[in-house]
Length: 189
Image (cartoon, rainbow, N blue to C red; front, side, top):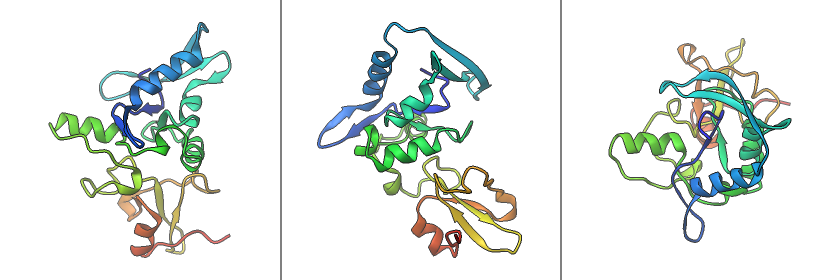
């Protein structure tokens, strides 16, 4: 379903053997919907003119269901609504999180550039783009009023309300180790 605030992976995943995870996601969604009526609430339009929407089966947010089952990732360009569901699916190794995969944005970027599809997990992603340009870099580096450099992981208390202002030196990180190596620290509790 194009237009989700969650992006369905469109490439091959590897979990002991290659499988078509995009196709698996589409089939799982079709099975979940069955004969039910689906309604979609448009929220935005992407740069290709496609509608970005929240789709529902009755009162159930299908975008959230896809992410929670590990069939889609949170598409942070339009919303952070599904970040927590993604973190849970990842920690429980549901769907694509049990495999090696290339995120949809990276797959499309490589395809447009005529490059090869390379399976990666977010932790294994290479330095092809800077941390702030890569969709798989989800750790927010924030500078507080005192000038402390603090990083926030998805699912933590202040993650959702933290906004990264690159113009003031804030940035995104791909791993906690990367953040620590750059001199940032975890928040104090």
